Length: 167
Image (cartoon, rainbow, N blue to C red; front, side, top):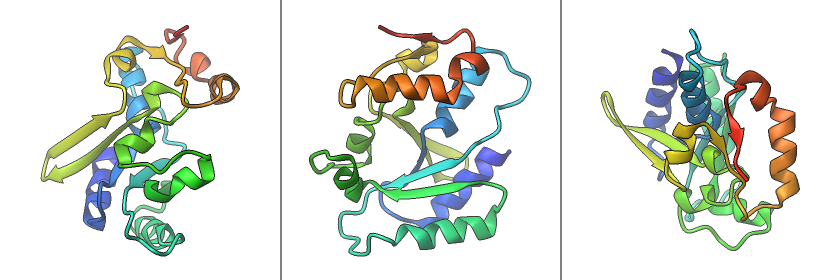
């Protein structure tokens, strides 16, 4: 139950709008759609949060360090979405959900957090219908070539051959 332990640890950080996002959720859904016996190993664990009051742009490092101490076997990637718009050349994001609406694939824009013991909240910038259908959908908020490169370089269609790239 690696994912449950990871969610428990992230919840203990007690930072605003904090979720585990992207492949942590997406890949598990794709594994289920393909009836895989065991989940695809996690390349990394994307922890997102939204704290516009956080003055130190390197504050995420302390959160990553705390998580690494607890679960060193995971590649933790923690980012404050309140400042990521600058790196991405976007207008200021309004929330973690808004930030996800700029990610290259719509199905990647999904996140989960623990809200209480054995209780979880899932958010998805574009809903979950296309994810549950096995689609990979281009998000027009990003350049098409970024999407195409990611589909190819990530090997998603090799790992999960029943997926389809939506037009």
